[in-house]
Length: 489
Image (cartoon, rainbow, N blue to C red; front, side, top):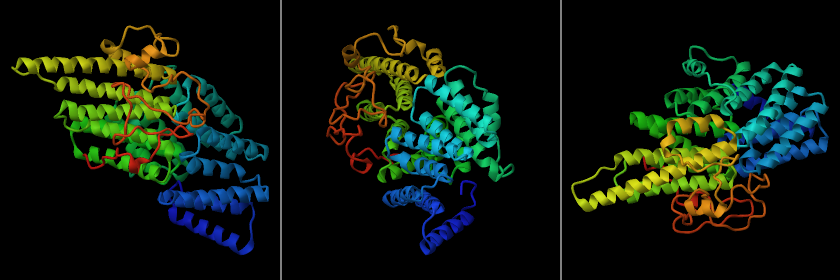
């Protein structure tokens, strides 16, 4: 299936289900229903049916007490299905369980596959990189010890990516450029190499988009999307969205070619369709790309378009921070600051004295907001452990960074109350409080009001303050909160 031989894959799937229906259950029956769930998941139309298939497979696995295929079933069901709406820690626990069962059964490749998917998910949900690197190093070493070289290549690429982000090693931009020039039609990968190659482009596209090399990022993301077009796993959907989304937005700003706006719109529409099927864990990414889409519009009214776009970034920051998606919080803050910097250059004075005064006021406010966003970006990147981006922002935007001393966690030394009053806290609660890693949210949260970081007022959807449910998610879904603007571009 992942190698692209869809017809043969579907044939084996239907035969497996038919054999189960005719002759009874066995451990392989559990695998058949897992694959059936993956098939329905690829259509992205009925998540309830997908979940039912996978629930049946896990019950069959328990009933048959199977261990030979347990690692594969846990890896596939969590990676492709449960990760979209299940609390992150629960999905990670399932991968750890699949790893333990497979390793005890001597199925080392299945066990390491669970571990690598676990690592990819930890990376995609923004866990601290300085802690995560030890896990990534151990995974790469285990793959080498058990001589699973195909998976070792995947683990090694992710490890190298993390080392680049924490600043331990320099990014080899020449290597990324050479990868971006590959023509899959002239130089197609073998079926055995698709997974490893997909992981390489997974990491390269993310790096290029993070460091604003949008032309390279777009080429890398295009190849990555082609290699993984049949793979609907959570990590791949996330990286496709963030890398292609940011690259397309950046290319549109540079070239004004409408095809890039359409590509961004397509990524948003994909995320919207997932969220409509209750893939709640993609909501933060959706909000971020939605704000990026708004930022591409021609700005004709300061109090209209600029304010609306800035509020969209504020909502993205609020949703991502509420979900402990630290890396997306950092990106949203940086992108919001860069957007306001572009808007600052569009403001021009007129001969009217009153107009000149108003323009000066607007410029002063934009400058102040830019400083706040950049300070937030530095704080969030530091909290994530991405010191390479901290260095990048300090070098590019030093004139907009506050001289306020920072704690070791990257946040200012002012109290939480002072930070919130200044617009640096941005959420109406202290983001330094430890969360119970249930999707990075406070599991005891019942209700709450999110505060827009820049304007200091409650975030509203269609004029209503959203509730926060027990999982920490904002109440209501995409179809009812009035933020989908796919027709704006």
